Length: 222
Image (cartoon, rainbow, N blue to C red):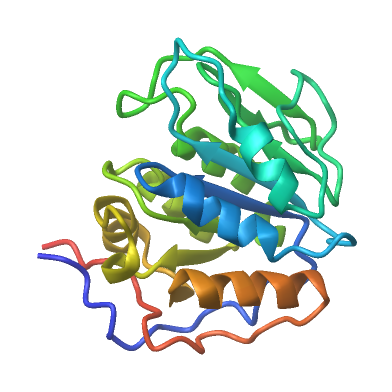
C-alpha cells in the first residue's frame, strides 16, 4: 500500500529559510526533469545545487555538457575536497558517490554501490543532512528504484525540507513513491511548480509549509 498523498500533514517546518544547499536525486527520466529545474535558477542563486543522477559506471558522463547550456549557473563535476560554493551546480561523476563533509567540502567516494548505483542519492542526502541540517532542501524526482528514500528521511530528521515529484507526473514513479512512503514530504509537486518554487526560493521567496495538497507524513508502519 502506498502512502496517502492527500493526507493532512503534521506540524512542519516554517519553510526552507536560509537554504544553503539544494540536493537533487533522479534516475530514469531524470535528465529532462533535472534540466527543467536547473533552467529555472537565476544567475544570482544564493545556494549551491548538488545533483545525483544514476549513471552507468563505465561510461563518461555528458551531464555537464547537457545541463550547462540550459542553466545560468556554472555546472561542473567536482573534484575531491573541493569547497561547495553558492551559485554553482555540482553533478556527481560516474562511479563515485558525491558526499558533503561536515565542514562544507565535497568528497568523492568509491564505497559500495547503494541499490546497485554509484553514484547514489542516499549517500548525498545523508551526508548533506549532517552538513547543512535545516538549511538543506532535498528533491526526489523520477526514477525506478528506492534510492533516495532513506536519504530523504535523514534530511527530514535533521530539520531539512523535502520536496518530492508527484508520482503520477514522473516518467518512472517508483522512486518518488518510495520516498513518500519512507519519509513523507513538505511538498509534492509537478515539475513546473517545483521549478517555479525553486526560482522563487533563489529570489528570496520562502513558502510556508504545509501549503501543498500533496504534503504528507511518512507511511505508518504496521
